[in-house]
Image 1 (cartoon, rainbow, N blue to C red):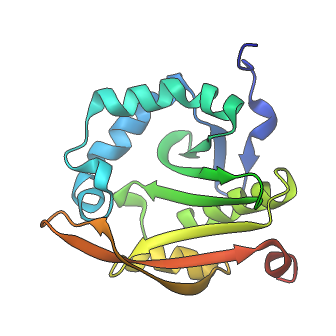
Image 2 (image 1 turned 180 degrees about the vertical axis):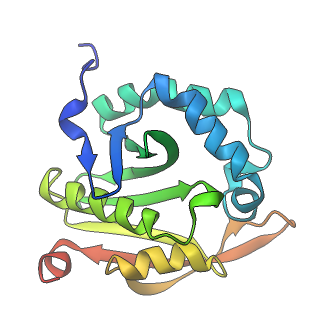
Amino acid sequence: MEPPEDLSFATLCTDRLELRPLREEHGEGLWQAVVASQGDLYRWMPWARPPQREGTLAMAAAAADEWYRRSTLSFVVLHLGVVSGIVALKLFRPLQKSVEIGYHLRSDLKGRGLMTEAVGAVVRYAFEEEGLHRIELQAAVGNEGSIRVAEKNGFTRVGIARLADPSPEGGWRDLIVFDLLESEWQSD
């Protein structure tokens, strides 16, 4: 069975953004977003040390198959028609109806609420279309932008994953663990 060619059913729109399932044709734009944000990404994302163009393009090329296998649902974030970031639902746990969410946005677009808006749209999709029960979000201690996105979307701090993330300076750092339950989201 082949992966579906048309994933347009999962296109999400907000007031300022369009989120589409990541496809191979988004690879170069995503790479440009990574390059434009290298300093910020390097501090918080282990895969960005150093960023690899081939890895970014390969991720985009594999995205449709990952949708089909339900392993990762990656949405490319388009702002004014330009690839500006990504939001991904990953680490699906079907029995628990649970998933982890991760994201990044071009550094030059930070502080405008765009990632809060994008994550909100994907959270809605996860609960309404995927029928999930729980979404987990992890942010490195000190990553105030990511922490704000979590809090503004109603996620609750539930603990610390101790020394769970490699630090760019060497060694390990703590992650703040957040979650959002579908029942809490519905009451918002």
